[in-house]
Image 1 (tube, rainbow, N blue to C red):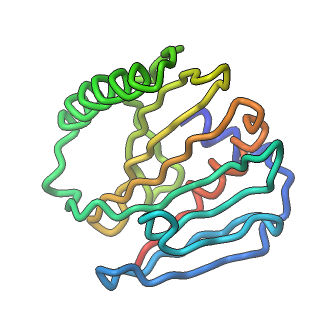
Image 2: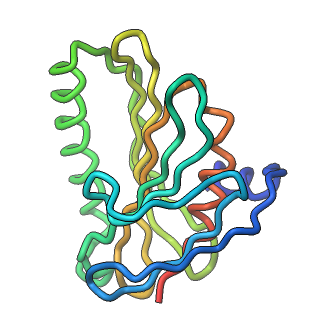
Length: 173
């Protein structure tokens, strides 16, 4: 929660673009993003992505995925199991890419707004000498669970306040 709160305070970027999208399941989501970012639909199977500025042949990306899980069917203790599965899968994936795990961020409750709560889990790892930061937010919005995720290179760390502001501004209908 501390990260989201700080991001909402110290993020000086202009946020004048608001985009609403209808997902395949007919649910509508809205995301507000910086003027210099763009949205993409169905990017490599991701229903909605927000793409940041290019730098060194990469860019920060926030993906938005419906989970088709109802909040009332998702118990808080399920997140510990989700985190344990995440660790096993991430460890196997990093090893398969001859990488090195740097750290995990355990399940953490977040509440960017009174009507938007959830949890996040994260990991940092290095592959081919490139340091990555990955965070998956599972947010409850109108009894639905949405996964908002970013996986960025360490050089894009400066965009974390923008990413977290977008996450905090996420809306669904």
